[in-house]
Each structure stands twice: as structure tokens, then as C-alpha cells.
Image (cartoon, rainbow, N blue to C red):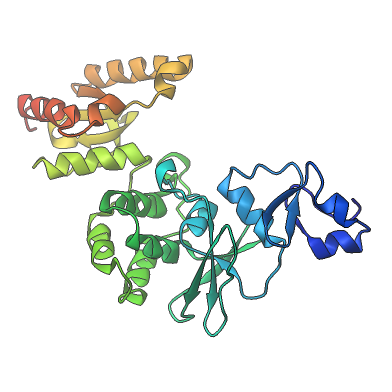
Length: 301
């Protein structure tokens, strides 16, 4: 085993050089995720783990792209859009790999940036976002765009490494790719401030139903002191909208803080609407009706 990294992958050539026999290479417990690559004990159901295993090939010019780049950058992707195969690209005139378990892409070097993520060569996040426009629906592209320019800054006060300028650059440089019209439409709807996929979905549902665009992760002050940060808000009507994921129900501390925050807001004269995943179910999300009623019963300041 000396010199071989079993979980992250090693090549057949490396195994022979380390003294392995052919029988051992094909023996029980040895995984064969890709031609010429072996792993032992790797979690190959995980897309990131498959990318790491493929990296053992150390093929010059290979770069992870599309869905695989999205996973490696940490995009908020729905599990249903994750493919079993990994996406690997090569820049022309280089040729992409052709093998089982890999979707190959030939890219033009112009307009793409390549970065290193956890030791892997990956197309830049904004380029991966643009590449996904050929496969993902509009809402998913907006969710990712919100996530890219917001990061967790509303909580951490640390700015995201990506900006709206990065997304605009990607749209300009990918102007002839399939899905570019959808990508431009997504860019028009991307907003800073959303901290979750569901917050973005809720915002889009409200705006699509004709309600004004809400403020995102809005800080509420009372007598000069900050009393809450609410997911979505109509400050001029003192209306706060909170999306509660399952952890708000299962985590006792979070559950109690939700109640305390609601009481602080109500004491400051705010109306508070709590919503869950059930309220966002199609075809007509109940959330829209609930927020519309609260909006119309409120009074502008």
C-alpha cells in the first residue's frame, strides 16, 4: 500500500509500481470507478468523491466543468439534477476524455477562467453557472446566482468571493452558448441577500404573484437596537416573513429563538408570518395567499 492514497484514488500504473499484482488489482474490496483508476473504501455515491478519484489520472489539461464544477464550488443544487457521471472538459485543441462514468466537453479557452478547489482544477464558479444554463430551469439559475453574490455575508459579515460583475462577465463571454437567453433572464432576477434556496423561491413566488419585491434578510431596529434579522420583509408595512426549515422544528434552541424573535417583532409593532416547505408546494403555493392577506391587512407607515 505504500505511496498509494486508497480513498482518494490511485492509478493502475501506480499500483504496479508499488508491487501490486493483477489479481490484487481486481480483488474484492478494490473499487474501479474509472478506467485505469482504483480506490478502496471511497464513498463513490458522492459526486465530489468521484471527482477526487478521477483526479488520480492526473491528465494534463483536464478541468472539471458543468455539474461537477457546481458540486465542487458548493452550489445549492437540488439532488434530482445531479448526474451519476462526472463532467470533465478539455480546452481546444485538446480532446476531452471518453470513458464510462465521464461526460466529456471540449471548450474554447477564451472566456473561461480556471481555478483550483481543494487541489482540483475547476472552471470558475461564474463559468459553471453559465454552463448550467443549458440544463437547469430558470428558478435554479436564479437560486445559484443569489447564492454566488450573497454567500453568508448577512450572518458572517464576510463578503462573498463572487460579485454581480463576475456573473455579468460570464453572460458576456458565454453569449453564444445554448441557454444564453435563460441565463440573461436569470441575471435580471438575481438579488443580493438570500441565504437559502427556499428564500429565493419564496421571493420569486411573491413577485410573480404581483406583490412588491421584499427586502432580504432585513435588519429590524427598535429604539436604536437591532432586535432581529428577518428572511424577507416589507419594512414600510412592518411585515416580516420567516421561512422555517425542518431544523427550526427539530432544534430546540432554534425553535425557542424563533418564538422569542416573533415576540420581539410583535412588541415593536411588526406583523410576523411563519412559512414552511408545505406553504411553497405547487401548483398555487399557499405562501402567496398567506403573505398577500398579511400585506393587505397591514398599513403603510
